[in-house]
Image (tube, rainbow over the protein chains, first blue to last red):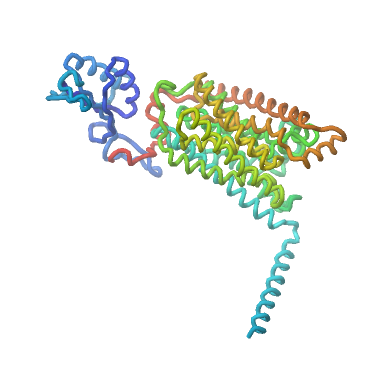
Length: 114
Length: 444
């Protein structure tokens, strides 16, 4: 089992979510996060350009069995990349080993609980 | 001691009378201070409806579009006010030109010629002009609900300016100017007391045409588009209800009996509409939603807008309830047909306005009908008036639809009306305004 954590652009969320559903990856957790990267965001405040300290991003957490890692990762890459070959700020994907997974309702453990 | 008190009281009374008399004497210029005071209040109340509408609409869109949507209303305050001063008032309330298509009076240009003008109703013409100007602001702002979340801000600004000049001003002239042809149709004219046809039907129909031409929002209807903040929607609905007293009761252009009649009809219709919506939704969905209640308020208010001057409270109650029922069905049908009127500008304002303008014929108070009979010199009944109402409404719908279609088509081809996919996904706040409405959602 693996835990796939993806940090993506806010405005790509709909597209990524739709692509994941299409690929039958439907069990996902989404949260709003902020962070530093190489991307700069720009707001305007009373005629002045403002660079916020932290850039808002979307974080996806998806726990999958090993067989589904590739399709999940490929789907995210394809749908989260900005049109025209991608740009700074499109995000990152982290894959970490997942020790255990438990479904609370049935107390099932391991791969079938995912 | 007692004697002293009496003397003091008497003196005060005397002073009050003297001052009151001198106050009246100061108004030898024909100003009815009572009517003027109420019209000033009404003007402010109608202006309050526009931030109210901004909140109502703003709460209903997604977080990334809240400022962009509120700016649709606020931009109308800027654009339409300036246009109104320059030529809007002249086009609406000047004498017929171009075969009655619009009015025109050079004196009204920049309102230059009404500096000292007091109207027959006893109010300064400035007040009347500003009061009417508020209607020209809210009408295009209402349209924005139909194509919310998917239009470019710059094109929207051009659109409402042209729409105001080519749709609102002619329509306003036909219905409300003393020589407008709908104002003079039939025995006592087509009834549109406070803007059922001029404001709500025209905004609703134009919104529908624009929404269908521009297409649905990306992902509609498969992706849910949850309201960003129903709390501000509820506050907005409350402000609209309050502001509507200016809208309807102010439309009597006086401060007297007809004002009171309109005010009562307004309150009753809004309440009946809200209750009706709650009951229908309770039966249909099993729960009474806050947004449903707010929608019912609006449906009731919209329906009573054309009728407020001619119906008694029982009639207003019926109109509010009927409008809620029909609007609810219209939204059910919309969901089946699949076109994307984002915030139901047509479903509530268009449909509610049509219901009000047509159905009011059945609830007209006796004295009005008797007047109409006397003027027509014989017979004038419900069915005659219904015919006049139907003709006025049909003409307005046809004119709105055709001119709006041309405007939207040309603007879309020349400057681009619809947002690009990228702009739409990023949201209007960031794409067109460089801001975020809900800054506190993310640590920054």
